[in-house]
View 1 (tube, rainbow, N blue to C red):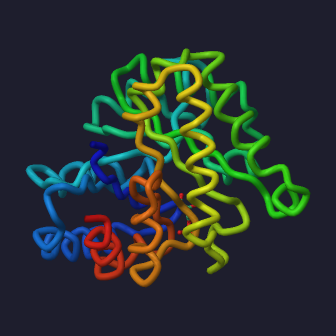
View 2 (view 1 turned 180 degrees about the vertical axis):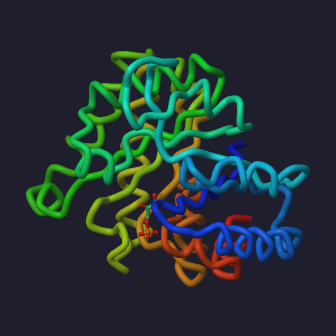
View 3 (view 1 turned 180 degrees about the horizontal axis):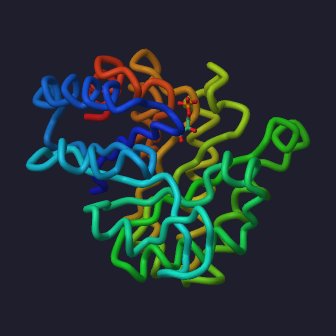
Length: 251
Ligand code: 13P
């Protein structure tokens, strides 16, 4: 049985004061969330030390939004996976569509990052998703399966068993538009079937979470779908009450 997982992706948001306030709000209400649900937050790299301190002893885990694959070197502005390990990070998002679109990250680079995260013993959260145009042209499954396959080619299917997949339709991110539960389920099922053709156990064990305008009000219907194992939450994770409401709906 796969445990549900809800991760907040704070993106480029938050002052130190806001981070403190948000975490205090989460700490006050995390007891309302079933212990059957895994919960984590992914602040900016800069806020990771502060968040790590504030989360000490909490059941809320710590994730990072990105990492550079090499352990060290002349890479101005980058943060390596091994640095994240030192700060108690558990999950690392790789291949978020904002990184793919704004920073030009390719499937190959994403696959290299994925492998580096695993090698350091952390859990990569591989994000895949189609643009609106790709969906309208009927290419959704082709696109997301190719993004997944690039990682399988690099890391092997067994590696997926130690990772999390996140289906995030680009057109649903930050737009208030959500894939309907049925639309999302179709893609989640396709991702799982693709893995199952190579390794049934990995496919059965790997969590596939959904992201794209998830709110307290729509979370339950999404999370009820057979192949949706939780959520990757952007805007709604910046509000303690809303995020907790989403987490409660994951049980
Ligand atoms: P929103 O929840 O703001 O649509 O963002 C989703 C997302 O990109 C999470 O990684």
